[in-house]
Amino acid sequence: MKKTDAIIIGAGPVGLFAVHQLGIKGLKAIVIDNLDKAGGQCIELYPDKPIYDIPAVPECTGEQLTTRLLEQIKPFNTELFLNERVDEVHQDDEQWVVKTNNNKKFTAPNIIIAGGVGSFEPRKLSIKQAEQLENKAVFYSVKNKEIFKNKKIAIFGGGDSALDWALELSKYSRITLIHRRNEFRGAQHTLSEIRKLEKNGKVAIKTPCQIISLDNEKNLKSITIKFDDEKTEKISTDFILSFFGLVMKLGPIAEWGLNMDKKTIEVNPKNFETNRKGIFAVGDICSYPGKLKLILSGFHEVALASVECFKRARPNEKYRFEFTTSSKTIQDRLGKK
Image (cartoon, rainbow, N blue to C red; front, side, top):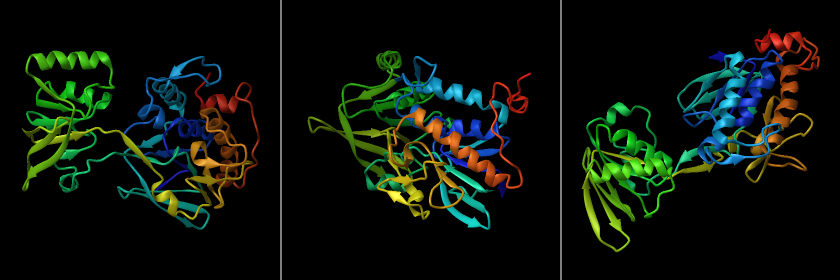
């Protein structure tokens, strides 16, 4: 079981800034996120969309903001546990114990929930057989592209994930790209490259259509798709990669005994602590009078929550507020000379 000063649930901008606010106070943290990369909604929902309300940054994308926050917390050598969902939380004296879906265990006096509006999960195929083949022949993300080499792959979706993987895997596999509409939402230059591959017979594009059945006994053999004109086509395939986007679910958080207001967690706006001592909620998932769902507000919330975290993690030390511009201690922690 790994011990630390604070467990941060959520690797979005607010969760990453929490690492910074804890770090300048000398506290260690670990970050757990259900997604396979840091950035939260900024990365998953609008990586290229401009953000205009970050102080002193006239304009940046979600991806750029995430990159800068990761750069900012580098001095603290914080471990990020990605592709991990927190399933269980229980108290052991003054400590909180967290267990993930992969049976990893962590303990700390503080938990900061920075989970946006809940955890992101892939929108799954609605066909019953797909569930039986999940992580065998049906996948909603790519963790090891080697298994797809020299195979027949049906890729579903019209966004960047579908287009990017169609282009990448076409280097050594037979790709059929399937989308329910004629228009694709992904980057135009990627689509142009795929259209070139289509002309050369390296990628097949099927639109507008949807999957209606899978043909499998032990292994996936083929799929049947149905076009908008009611025609059907059977396609031989070894794997399905489905990129229908994400759905947001509150998940196990709803079972942790926290005061909930619909799908948000009620907090004390003085320190953003919940009704359970040592568990804090910040960002879009918390609610209090006057709450604004802005990244800026989340940064303010973690700044105050980190003070209370210090008091719990260092009960025998007096918290002393210091400015980063004048504190030699903070500058040392940030690696500044």
